[in-house]
Image (tube, rainbow, N blue to C red; front, side, top):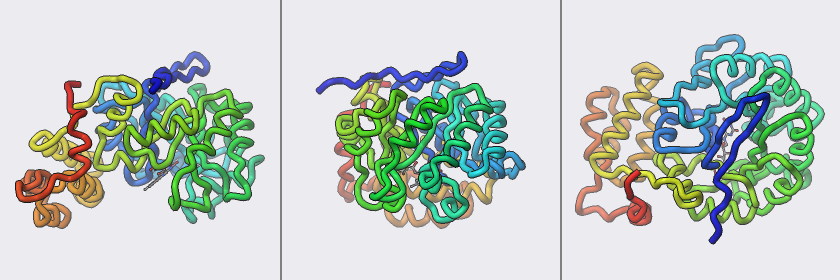
Length: 352
Ligand SMILES: Cc1cc2nc3c(=O)[nH]c(=O)nc-3n(C[C@H](O)[C@H](O)[C@H](O)COP(=O)(O)O)c2cc1C
């Protein structure tokens, strides 16, 4: 098997952003907050992208929007992008300026979100139905900042209007530096399987790098997605939930970067405790406890710990009690079968 090209750099106006290895954390509203991006960056990735931030709310300083766009990763070795959503060129441009001023190395524009609330406001994937308006937004953002601007979209609105190549070509001409393509249409939402082969048509139509996205959850699916699409890299979303090391594992398998040490046992307990405390510090105690539950649930489902301890962790409101229950909730008791993924992960445990 050939090793795909490891190097991915975007250059614009003297800003060089290194996305090597080209394994990117997907923006996921309610999930890829700063604590989770920090955790993924700690293991390694080419780029982490913020949750989508509503442009007007960001400019009007709604605190939750500003929090979503925060960028303080540890050490700064992993590139960081802020993703903006909206339908008004003025707010998109202003929000992009703000994000650049706060240190975003890249701005990503959301033209893929299928949610009714977003589409109803003529944002997200609704923009695929009005490419002229989509272009006005792209031009406004590209004109507002000097860092690279990227675009994330889907194959089209539905099967009768797969226009990602048209959008991509026009976006490229307007100065977009990279396109990420989720291999589904808007009308598919998250149903069916991502069509990686359909991404190939867009790769061939464009000169800028195209990143393949959708249903990439491990090295095997990443390799298959790259082979089918010819894309310059992969973006991973749900596959990283409860497994922030997954991007680094994919990068090691595909691009030969050092394999991460996958935490198990006491090391996993330490990692989850650190993530939990980071979430409490970021959101404050009360909101933090609630936001943390989905991440704790994913970690525990992966690890296959004691069911009663898992239930306790997900219902407790005292952080000290949650932390105390983590060892039982994350370490399988000897009587329980080892989860299959742990077997699959085992050979990859090597020094970082
Ligand atoms: C809970 C959730 C939230 C998401 N939020 C965003 C978002 O804010 N911006 C965006 O462009 N895509 C968003 N997506 C789509 C993902 O970025 C990605 O395109 C999709 O999940 C397919 O990739 P995956 O199969 O690797 O998860 C979201 C997906 C999920 C499941």
